[in-house]
Length: 218
Image (tube, rainbow, N blue to C red; front, side, top):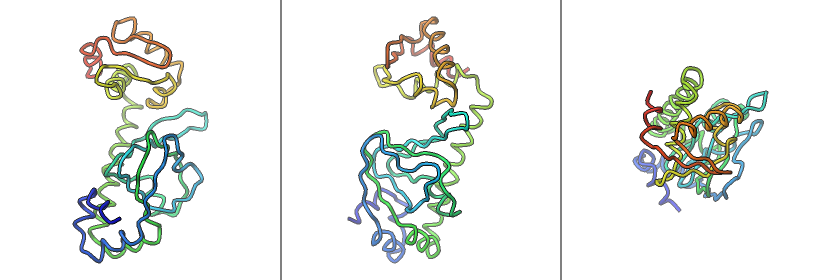
């Protein structure tokens, strides 16, 4: 089962002894949609490499408000897991599969061994870490400084299928944006009034993509 490593070019390019540490200890896992991969208070036991599917990483405030921090897709690792492995701290966020996920789990001991021995593995781990930290900082910047109607327009365009439809609830969008469901509801009604979207229970259709795109780039 060593073929999985070809999906991660930086790992495939490692010298054979370094690669072997990973392939000899790799465990292939399959997770159905809606599976909680980790949650606050859990300890990180393995370094996760997603082969295909998507894991959504989100955080919940003391008041119960949720926000999506980032997603992990095929060919990527999870920086929340990396941070917990490096610091020996518990998870402070939740990871949930959005689709069936196939992944490779490298046990903590093998991860630490590879990190200590392999400069190439360290570059891969910290390169992915720095890239993802930039993504999270972008989320923080958006929440703090961007107008909500602009952010909502951006998320609708990003999440819509090619025909412009989304199967999504107001709460789903509130979690994406880090705001309250009622606030999203008011914003959607305004977009509907302006002719940008049509609304139905559990779904949204983009009716004026050009207008919504213009709002998203204000």
